[in-house]
Amino acid sequence: MSSLKLMDFPDNRMDSCDLLDIIKAIEPLIQEYSPQRIYTHHPGDVNIDHQRISEAVITAARSTPNHATKTILFFEVPSSTEWQVSPVKATFQPNWFVDISETLQLKQKALAAYDSEMRDFPHPRSYSAIAHLAHWRGATAGVEAAEAFVLARHRE
Image 1 (cartoon, rainbow, N blue to C red):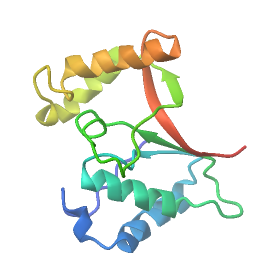
Image 2 (cartoon, rainbow, N blue to C red):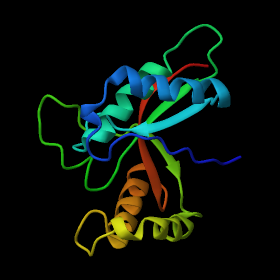
Image 3 (cartoon, helix red, strand yellow):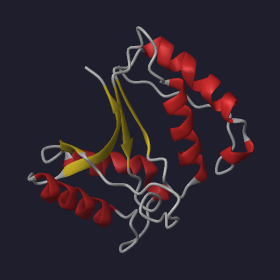
Image 4 (cartoon, rainbow, N blue to C red):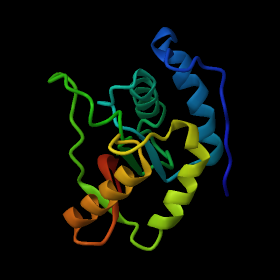
């Protein structure tokens, strides 16, 4: 199953939205789809929209009795996650790796959907830099290429 829901929140200005409004937009989706695993932005990203979404997802997916969500993983976004310099914000320190050695080329093709967001190397959001990052994360985990995550919550 795949779906895309776009909501009417302002781009790069989600700090102007009440957090409760963002949470209330996410909660019905969690109830509708009952995901066992949720991927969301790392809360330490420099992008304010990423920070707000992460915060709202953590609240919307809070552990309550009979809640389907067992795992929440924070992902990194090149040119957002690594650019945070504030010592107050948590840094991205991955502790969950997924082997993408067999699908890295497919990921590169999928990035074409975001071609307007891509930049020339050596920008971190370039096709080349993203491939290098996947290989670096893979080397960290002992595979050819990997996606790296920070485990936010997990229960059996």
